[in-house]
Length: 108
Image (cartoon, rainbow, N blue to C red):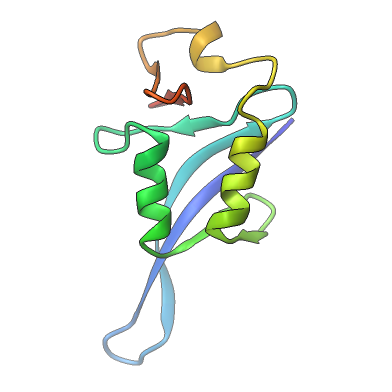
């Protein structure tokens, strides 16, 4: 069992000013006994890339609807850094890689 995390950016409606959620992008998954598994894209290739995006604004939310500050999210990721298992290392499939800091990514 695990928890998925998402980055949500929002912008006010130019007509009424109401703020709607505009874009939801999956950051990755935290599972018991595993390192944090990041979702990567052509533009997001490392933990540093994710931190740049998160620090620029928006919100981090888990699949239960809980919100996290950038500092709280870092603690979650870094607390799992040395977990027993790492999907990117244990199940290489052509869609997975490890960034320079050793964090695992998958584009699936």
